[in-house]
Length: 331
Ligand code: NAD
Ligand code: TDX
Image (tube, rainbow, N blue to C red):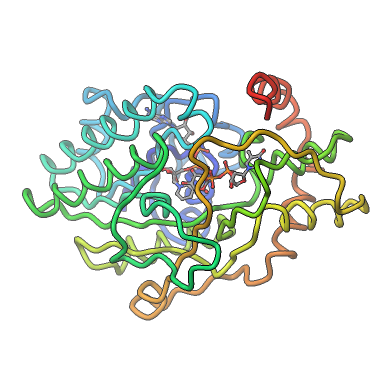
């Protein structure tokens, strides 16, 4: 089987490529533009006769067309992925997340290639802190940020291409991922590396916003289960019952380093900041028999902290520039 993985040099896409190599016989082509968020190092050590990297833009039909034509399946991770960046400059989010997905859909339609679209729970907007509800596959779309609106737009395109053109596609909407190789602009790696560098973690607003954390290895096994056995045209929510407030995550990081739990820098809140995300993943579990391996967040977090301690050579070069961007916004 030949699988095209878009965005396979990013945080989650590269984890999926490792998952494919370790658990399947698939040959993998990674199509990645190598933006600031990518890391070729995340693909290091993979067998050259199984994995090939093509540097290119998913919105460029001339690049996409021949790669899709030779593939049995496309797993689509490529995206602009950071909410804060989408507030500073939404243009690349519309271009990559919406136009790029459109270009891929047209190619899989022409060549009748199986398509899996990787999306986010943020398309559903947010929940109240005291709400008993969680997101399900039937929750109405209500995205808040340019990022989540662009992902919602891409989901709608996929659904329309399934219904109108019979494209063989599935969609997954996953909660917040953590693990190795995540860019230091994101919450958990930012706080871990702030503490390693001797500064205070930086928390937006009142810190009570809740995210539903899943280890990226578990996201990869879920996507593989959906690609292999998911029903065409269906959406599956991916989550591991990992709800935590931001301040609780930061306190866990501080505890790990033996620092006082209130050693926190409270900074300017994110505009339009979603309050709470929570995933009900019963459909994925009962239909496809998927279970997360990382049931204990503190263990997964400890392993992730250890990885950032051991891999400072990877993240230090991008740390200064990332923090300069945040500093300009009082964050
Ligand atoms: P990331 O920013 O770490 O990686 C994105 C990758 O896509 C990078 O390698 C980048 O170079 C590539 N890319 C960007 N624009 C491209 C283009 N025009 N053409 C080709 N490649 C391009 O993102 P991530 O956190 O790994 O997220 C991957 C996917 O998973 C995204 O679709 C995101 O919406 C989704 N997702 C992420 C999370 C999360 O917690 N990070 C949760 C749910 C869903
Ligand atoms: O320094 C920070 N301080 C802080 O309090 C940063 C970077 C974030 N935060 C807060 C904002 C959020 O409530 O932490 C939470 C997590 O922030 P992010 O890591 O930016 O993630 P989020 O906005 O929740 O989106 C993530 O999960 C869903 C991914 O970036 C998306 O790609 C994915 O779709």
